[in-house]
Length: 151
Image 1 (cartoon, rainbow, N blue to C red):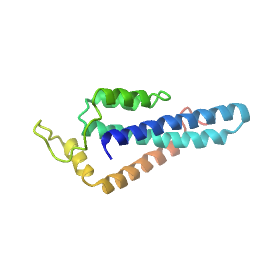
Image 2 (tube, rainbow, N blue to C red):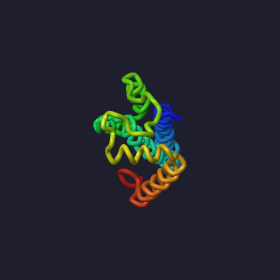
Image 3 (cartoon, rainbow, N blue to C red):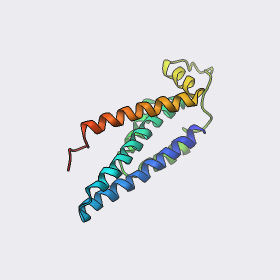
């Protein structure tokens, strides 16, 4: 799977989970179904964290400037904004190409570049570590509580 395809799938998934969260909020307000926010919000939070991690991974691999990674991650805060950001990045050529698995002649030799290349060459290890870290962050955030406190 290319960086472009992975980023697009997660950007669309993040937008879809906004629908789940918004639906949950409407159900809580109109039908007193607080569980809908718990479910929709939990799914959305998990996918948000996934999108943030994938934005970082793709951004390092594609050599985005840090500000571009921030734009990608922050777009997930605005409902449905990950899709136009994906289109914008694609049109600018920021998602083009295969994963970089070897250093190139452009001086591409930073620690993060090397780490991402190492993981990209070992996708099973990457996925396992990514999921474990994601679950640890998600679990920690669940223990802290929902944004804005409980309702």
